[in-house]
Length: 594
Picture 1: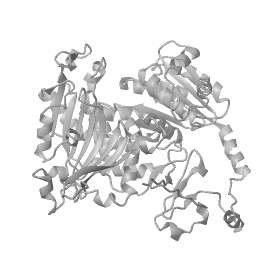
Picture 2: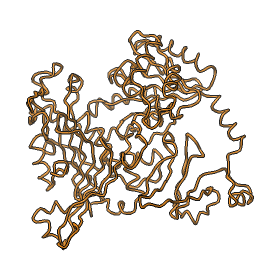
Picture 3: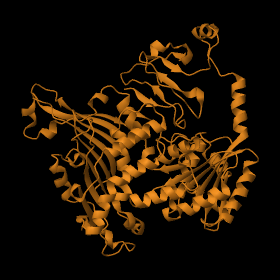
């Protein structure tokens, strides 16, 4: 099975094709420079492959097994003769020198605003270290932590050190690499609304930039109510004078259309749209990245990707734990704002979009916006909401949502929601897209389930009995845990009789690939540094997303709709099954085989 990979995972925008076989023989690859491949051989629809980390790292496996690799342009036919004789082509020394000169002239300063918080400690600093370990960060870079807490550089390093780990497949010089990384980490204490404190940060950044072209990235790991103050102070007092300045903004991006629009308007007083990187970490997950590859580079899937063959699509998110002391934050937003309006809707848009003109960020985001604008806003009739209650299982008592001391006793905030959405365009008209998200459920998972239509006039219906759903093909893309892609097919059980079985064609990532899957934050941080916006949310995309959910959220608040209660550790409210049945659908994650 052909697998998409990259010679260096940090080259986020490069594409490489590799091939391996499980049949028991070795494939031999012929390396051919791109400049020697005729356009006719590649076909009329050529793909331009670029790499920002290493321009010579791009390779593509041709259909005949040859491996093409991008090399410097060839002036005459002599290199071709050398290639045939076994010589290799290398980048001239002057090209390397030119690249090194550029590295010496510029630097990247990364400031984590809110450095003392959990997100920074558990995700951002470890992701930056992983990028450093993979040699994905520029030659000259500095990392600053900025927060209100009083802390020295040494105290920041000790705090960060506790959260750093090396990949299982890369343990060499781990301790040495950690110390090198930590020596690039510094701390500045200050208020988020103080221009004077950000001026002090600016002075320290300039000391480390040492006169080079300064590129600055600010990661706002802070509550949304202080985004604008921090952006204002950073822009007025600590922006780059001769390079780029970019700001990563964490969700939530408001609570509804009005607050989101106000936040965007306030940010744009100080930043241009292309300086704002709205991060949704689910878009950086490996299987979401692979979603468009699976569809657009495999002939067997693209023709089936429509209402003609797909009966329904399910986007499922479940956690097997409750709020666990974070109820104060969660109660202000709820599961619909926290998961459905961003994570699941973004996945839906990528899944359902038309083929973009190119892999350029704007082309992809244009197609996502078209999907969102083709959808009707949700109403309460389209949704089932729930809230988990206390439950005792196996002698262990699990608390209910309102048992959390940070949650009001009379809270009606949903911890579970299921919704049916429809896309009113020619490709998806009439196909239900069912979303389901919840806390304190029976397991932890995030997946996309594509259920195909029944085979017309199936010759083997008798073998499946009255339950035709057992004969339905289903494509499952499991985002987490145990990343996998598997296709459910009908198969004859070996023997003299005619007994059918439902089997899985399974690509389990941990069995197929020995490389540890990078954290989503690594990919997104690297993209932000490189200016790649494909996985970040544009303002009009955000507006379209909120316009779908704002009428529902207002209706729930105004009517004080009481959620259906479900026991901690259960499969969720019964109402979710009735919602699916309304569209002649069964939730795919509740079958016996699951």
